[in-house]
Each structure stands twice: as structure tokens, then as C-alpha cells.
Amino acid sequence: MASLFFSPSSVLASFLTFALLSGVSFAADPFVSYDYKVSYITASPLGVPQQVIAVNEKFPGPLLNATTNFNVVVNVFNLLDEPLLMTWSGIQMRRNSWQDGVLGTNCPLPPRWNFTYQFQVKDQIGSFYYAPSLNFQRASGGFGPIVINNRDVIPIPFPQPDGELFFMIGDWYTQDHKELRRALDSGKELGMPDGVLINGKGPFKYNSSVPDGIDYLTAHVEPGKTYRIRVHNVGISTSLNFRIQNHNLLLVETDGHYTAQTNFTDFDIHVGQSYSFLVTMDQNATSDYYIVASARFVNETVWQRVTGVGILHYSNSKGPASGPLPVPKTDVSTPWSAMSQPKYIRQNTSASGARPNPQGSFHYGQINITNTYILQSLPPTTINGSLRATLNGISFVNPSTPVRLADLHKVKGAYKLDFPDKPFGRPPRLDRSIINATYKGFIQVVFQNNDTKMQSFHVDGYTFFVVAMDFGIWTEDKKGSYNNYDAISRSTIEVYPGGWTAVLISLDNVGVWNIRVENLDRWYLGQETYMRIINPEENGKTEMDPPDNVLYCGALKNLQKEQHHSAATSVSNGHWKLMFSMLMALLASVFIFC
Image 1 (spheres, rainbow, N blue to C red):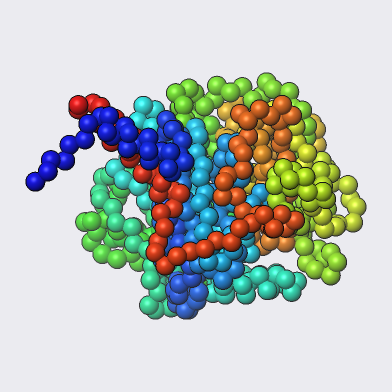
Image 2: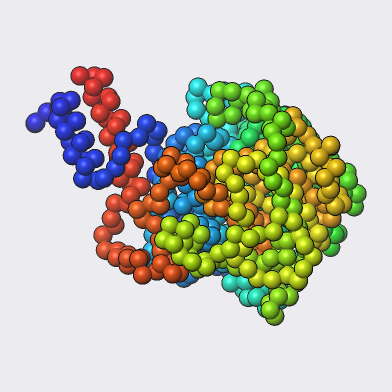
């Protein structure tokens, strides 16, 4: 038998040949690669068969797992019957809004096509999620968790947990996203959801109101051990209170930033938000325990059915859970009391984040504010005969040609740089108006919620310091109450009805970045805009060029080449990158051992 021996020179030659043929570049940071096939499957999470959106035949989708500074390659195959974009909530996409996955920055992926997203999770850690951003599709699924781990050389600010649990919670309708979309298009509100899902499953039969035969979540744990529990509200529009019967939730992280560690018996998680808790299995296991996610900031008596219930099962449990569900400690009829909970969320200033320096070392409170934007939301209104939602009186209409592509190809009239920095009280209108933001500015954004429901606001490409929230109308004198020392930095924040939330953002990430309400009905109806942040001295270092596989649409659709797929599965760009990193490891090992 011939020996399998490779000399360093032969390996190097093979490697160089591979690199030249494949067109890949040398990189210091590792790659992780995923293939995601987004398709319909039939499921019955609330006992009613319906069409849901799965990723790789899973609902919710599989975990995307990476480590700080890794390059992530996700080859997405659109097996739906309509266009698709995937967005990566909370991932900051440094210098790379081309991969953001929203209509203002990317052309949609047509049915039966695939697109390879590639981005680096630069200087990030924590809990995030992915989801479709088009056509109300998130209401049917397509979401899944993302974890970005610390590098080994950066300690986490708590003892290493014995395990991890993931909970994707959200309100749910037995109608699919197309039916819900049609209801909104016809001018109707969606009304009360049919239930709440936990990891794509319906409620445990905790009383007679729950139908028989519903599949529910069971989380298996060992007594005495501590688990990191990552919870994401991926629902449509309902804030949810999360709790585990008889167990404390020690808050440790949100949206990729470590928090001051505070114990809660229950916690309000608003649409689009992600949290990590440490939970110690310190009960005597006389029975199983309820895991509950129930509707919040509504008439809870009327909305009783909008409750998700799973089971926490100790390995030594002596019987099933029974009796009434645990209830939240705070009363939403006194919202001042409920608002005290988010005010407890502070930055852990002694912990390192993705880098070996304290997260609180950035003295944001001492930086001069260069611009203030007050973004006011109002209840939906009729514009040109259709129900629409607005920010500062503008209901956003997505451009047919994405903003940055329009810039590069000098497409005129694709959008306007005249988004107002405050509400003016003029009649609402449809427009393609975006914010002309200044690179390296330090801005204040005040989300003023004059709608009747709790809202969550998200900024792509950035995290922001949450310096204050209150009820009433924001005025300049409110700055005196700001937290200028240890405000939490995050990417999605709740804004109470009749209230405001103020955040500070350092505009150091060049690109075009979406600002939106995460409540899916309001987002679909136009409650969003974009920040266009351009470096006037761009030299190729602050913004990446469009990727080789960029999609074209709108005024540039003639530049798009048709995709042709053979019966044989081709090797995706992501797989080339993964093979490249493996070759690098092989090459290193050969030189070490030879």
C-alpha cells in the first residue's frame, strides 16, 4: 500500500493552487459555514394544521453558532413561493451593510435561488437570532437562534454554566403570514393572537381550556446544576412575560452585552429582544415545573389564551406539574411600576465583552451630542386609501433599487435624504425619505410612542446606550435625568405607550442601516426608515465593496445574471471558505510535525 505522506512543499503547492483556482483570500480569523434551506412544512403547534416556514426542515430553525471575530458564511436557498431576505438581528455587520438582509440595502432573493451571506462577527459576543424580513414571513416562522461565544482568552463574568437552554417565544396565529398580510392590506387590525409558542410548540395542558393532543416543550435538566437560558421574543407584536415556576432568573446579558447581575422572578421580554439568564436547579423536584410566556401590557383576563406553557423536568422529578400557573410580580395596570424593571438593566462595567477591556470604559456621557432625532409613532392611519403606520408622519415605501446600490450606480431619484429630525404635525404621507447621518457623529435618538400599544425599536448595524425612559413627552430638560455612567448598550429597546425612550449612538459604522419598529404589523405598514452614513474620505477601509454575488433589482435589474442550478449539488462559496480554513489548519499541522 502506498504511504499517505505529504511533504511541506507539496502541501504548500497544493494549497497555493487551490487558493488561485478558488479565488479565496488569506484571512487570520476562522470561518464557519452553514447551508440554510428555507421552505414550507406543515405543523400543528396549536392543534390546527397550518403551513409554517422551516429552516432545514426545522421549526424553529437550527442554531447558528460562532465565536468572536469568526467569519460566518450562510448559503440560503429560497424554497418558498415568494422572495426572501434573511436578517441577522443584533449582528453589527461592521462596514458591511451589503449583508444586512433588509429591502433598503439588499435586493430580494427570488424563489428557487440561493444567496451566500458572508459577514464577520467582529468584536461581538452574546445572544441573537435570525429571521426573514420580507412580506410578514416571520409570522410563519423562519427564525432561529444565534450564539456568539467568547474567545477562550476572554473570561465570562460568571462561573461556566453546566449547560444551555434556548427558548424562542412569540405570539402566534393559526392563519399563515399570507392571510395575516391580506388582513392588514384590507385595513384591518390583526386582533388577539391564538396563542404563544415556545420553541415552535403549543401549551402544556395546564387547565381545561387547552385542547388535548397539543405537543408542548419539555426542557430536561439535572438537579443542582446551573444553566444559561437564552430567551428570544420572535413574535409578531405581543410583549411577553417569561418565568419558570419557583426558580429565580439571574439576568446576565442582553443583545450581546453583559449586564449587572440582578435576580428576577419573572421578566418582560418585548418583541425582538434577546436575554440571557442563569437559572440554578435548586428545587426539590416534588413535581415538574411550569415554564410560562404570557401576554403582557394587554387586558390579561381577556388574553388568557395568549399564554405559552412548557415543562421544566428534573431528572429526579416525582410527578407532572399541576395547579395554577405562577403569575408575574408586577401589575401592568400600574405601568410606572412595570417600567422599573427595564430601569434595573445596567451595564456590567467590570466585565470584559468581546475585548479584554471593561465595557464601561467608553465614557459616552462626556461626548457632545451632534444631532438629535425625535422619532414619533402614532396609531395607523389611512393614507391614499390604505392603512399605514408612520414615523414623523412618513410611512416608508421601500425603494425598488436599494440605497447603496443606487449610490454606486448613480441611479437618480431612488430615495430622498430629507427625513425630518422631529415631528411637524403635517398630514401623513408615503415617501422614500431616509436620514442623512454624519459619519463619526454622536447622535441622540428619542423614540416617542404616541401609539396605543407597547413598541420595540431596533437599529441595524449598531448598538446604542439606553440613557432614559419615561412617560409623557420628551423635552430637552429630560437630559438632566440621563444615566451617563453605566447605561446598557443594546440594539432593541421597548418604548411604552404614551412614553419615550432616549438612546445615544456613535456613528462609526459606514453603510445604510435600518431603523424600524419590531412589531411586525407596524413594520409591515411602513413604520421604519434608514440612516445613510458615508465617509467622505472613503479609502476602502471603512466600507466594504459590494460582494461578488450582489443581487440587482429595480433600475439595475438588467445587470442581474440568471442563476442556473444543475441536478448535482454544487459546492457553495461558503464551503470553499470552510475548505480554505481547513487547509490552513492542515498546512499548519504539517509544518509543526515535519
